[in-house]
Length: 174
Image (cartoon, rainbow, N blue to C red):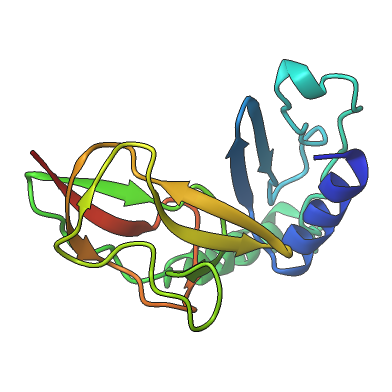
């Protein structure tokens, strides 16, 4: 990822009001976290391979309160707004390894429209085998199996938006 792509990603995250984002691709790890209270500017953490790219501060959410009394209602409204999050992930079976989304994007079960899905329920999968694609900012990211086994569950359907850490598949180890 170059500096321009990182800036575009940050602008997208600010536009969509996403507070925290993490991306791992090969030896690169990108973690962006925004705060809602005045703090020192958050820093983008980059793996050593990209250390030559300067850190980009992420703007914090605007603070409207000027007095402690005014800050109290603002804080409670933030808590209320954060409470209705995405529905809780289905409780996975104890013997399933859950493959979670490493990024925010759109889930696709096949390489292109009309192509057969990478995997189907009941298929035997090997560690490193491509399970799906998540599109994020026009980039197609292949999501691979972390363990070998049999694909037992699919938690997401084709074309669905996914968030970081959201369960995608359940693999029963063999």
